[in-house]
Image 1 (tube, helix red, strand yellow):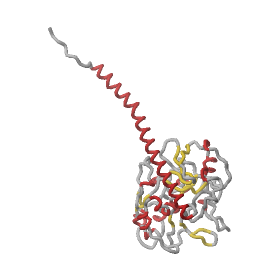
Image 2 (cartoon, helix red, strand yellow; image 1 turned 45 degrees about the horizontal axis):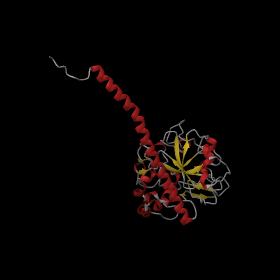
Image 3 (cartoon, helix red, strand yellow; image 1 turned 90 degrees about the vertical axis):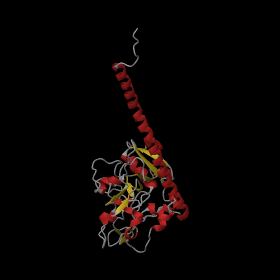
Image 4 (spheres, one colour; image 1 turned 180 degrees about the vertical axis):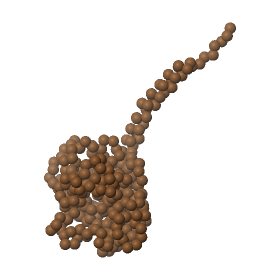
Length: 314
């Protein structure tokens, strides 16, 4: 009697392989979704830490972190008159982020001095607290920020390494170019005035904002949002003009991807599907949907326009 060997036929083997392939195809999106959920949670935590650091700064200084940028001359702002006088709000909160050593390494010098020349080591330092895990691009780049286009007297600025940030402060809904804004471009000082017109929590130069000045309510006013360092030439956590963005440019603007045009790249951007994480002035973090009305998106970013916005509107 001949005994037959047991085993799979070719058809049975192909069926098993096909079933395994289907199971893998079903499993991969779930794995990717779980990974993105983890990345998004880390991003929320980063923004939360920024919000807490800002409130710790308030406890000490009674105002939100102030920037240093430009200088007033007869009611207008000078930026490139043989100076490099731009230090960001993110530099100011370094001690509150357990980065006292880096803060102490930063050379603060007097009277419109060239800050960046004295801080080339600091400005190229990448900080994990400023990195969104969903962002796949480079964090340290050459040619970033105004420092690399500033007409200095020595050195080659285009060769400087500048560390970027995935988070920027809210300038408000001021316009930077072809988009309708509520006030002067970049929130700068209008002609005949001595006060910036920035409607948000930060201006690209010095603007003092107290808690009492946020009359729209801390919980309803956007403090920070997400950015992509490889999408805009103005991206540096250490520079005032490169650490803010405006909501007059729609979130994830796609009509023009020219990173050298502020009117298109000076807005908030995110790699998270469906929208972006945003920090609010009370220290909370919420997800703003990409489908948000542009009018509501802009209203959320202003601090004192009297808008009443339901939390489910964004």
